[in-house]
Image 1: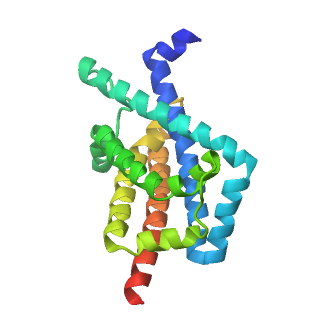
Image 2: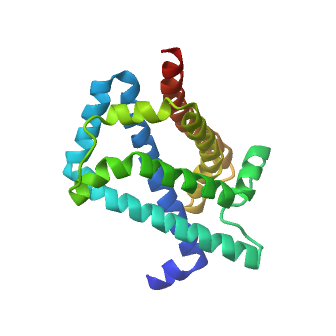
Amino acid sequence: MANIFSSSIGKKLIMSLSGLFLMVFLLLHLSINFAAVISEEAYNTACHFMDTNIFVQIMVPVLALGFVIHIIYALYLTWANRKARPVKYAVGSNTKASSWASRNMFVLGLIVLGFLAIHLSHFWAKMQLQHFIGGATIENPYLEVATTLSNPLWAAVYVVWVWALWFHLCHGFWSALQTIGANNQRWIPRLQIAARVFATLIALGFSFIALFFCLKALAA
């Protein structure tokens, strides 16, 4: 078992599985955030559920571990690829977009990581983290989101982030599935299409939320 995790194939497999795990989280996170567009009450109710549900509280450290593992193996694979060159994390794409994304996965990952730090400091640190450490939580999470995204600068940052994430997901989604065995030549084009659909859904959803609050504030 130890040899599997220390081997090159094992590292790529862990990278792929942790990436797929984080993609599921993105979809769930988008679904919850969309409640803010529906109404203030809906979003605050969703936040209360996230803060008090025992399953969610258990999953938070698991999620954090998933991010850490994904980042560590991304750093390792980038270093190994540059050192040994022949085979990269996910190989082969006939489209220009995917080819560019595959060549810049590490840079795109750094952009996503930088935004993640901003996102955590703006929201998670003021909400869910306070439940873990027994601090004072925000009474109205909706107002925190609305106030932040009503600032055109922050709204623009969020939109730039989600489209950097779009490129990262376009390549990462199908290459992760390819790494775990879905590498039949007939299926690769289908996986690439599925990757674009998933990435576009995520990017459009988060962009819509950011622009919704920004435009709402500007129109007020």
